Length: 161
Length: 355
Ligand SMILES: [Zn+2]
Image (cartoon, each protein chain N blue to C red):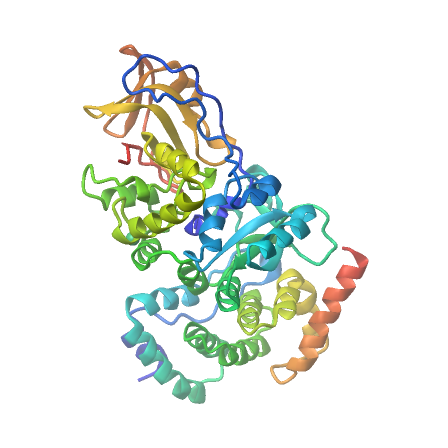
């Protein structure tokens, strides 16, 4: 059985392919997976636990943005924010243009107490995305990403933009 | 809430005014002032001096540790003073972002996701010393653990770079627990906080047995000082809500008995509710399904929602016919407000009195 079918059998709704929310697209987040999983957590917590049990296998099978984001959401809802951060960073590596990935990461960081970094992303997401791509960063460069975000925040503050 | 209606602290345009001299009608109160700011004699008075009494009960309940934590909005230039007062009452404070309030009409056209904003239209800035105006969003609690939980789930939707930035749904749902709201009400919120589908206050009304509307679960005056609760109850006789309100009432009574009397009086005024941010309170009484009154107050949010006060002031009786609102003066028709279907923020008017 493929991942999509397995997911649907447990969650009761489709695992749609991740949709990119480009900054230049001037649209809201379309991807409702995080929200639907949040609702599921309260209505059927056992289903969330089943998904949590499955996600490790799915991550072995597919290393794509959709599965990384799904993993991030499952861990976020389970309040394992370190794991959530890890998978949101992987989603960003796969698709840095997707603003949703950055917002997800920022809120995981907020829960981890990385408040400056979280705010740095939320308030300067356009610069962060631009320089992340320009510097060709990836999921393994978290310390570089951190320095980048903090530097952007400081520059913006000092220029009072 | 409306994000669990958490915006009690944000300045909103409201109508508050003196009632005229007491009339001879049997239902009239022998009182003069309604919906004015309240100045406690002592307990928590300093808070009112710097930011009005909108969140006073909430602050008192947090000081008394009946509520684990709360969030509030304070003018940036008064923040240091606010922090000092908190310290005096044993409260610790954590700041989040700065809100620069805007008007709905400016937002709808120019902001991605602006249509989803329901009660607060604000541009966000980091609170880092560079902002000299606006309102800083703060969290306060007696314990560090409660404060941190509340803070982490407590981001409020803001406009950043022409786009609404909101927290994940799971944080919104958990936030209610951090604020000490009853589980049943948080669950109800999860189910019915959908501005595309439901009128929340009406859903709670439907969820209550007829004439079991308990004044301690009246949420309609929560933004204007005179309520014990700051959440939207699942029903207007929700046991957990009444229990919570009772505890708060008792604690306030020990400090400010006159305040309790005033709150109770406000909570028992009859109401005409259109939806979550448009409703009116009356000096009057309900008889055979009709509300007879001698004065009316708009107590909803934002003056642009106050569409009917002048018509209501010309009348002395209001009632519902199907979903139309009919206003009469001594039996003569003043206005029929025809019900209209709306795809966002649906209005289902109803009349209710909490006792
Ligand atoms: Zn309840």
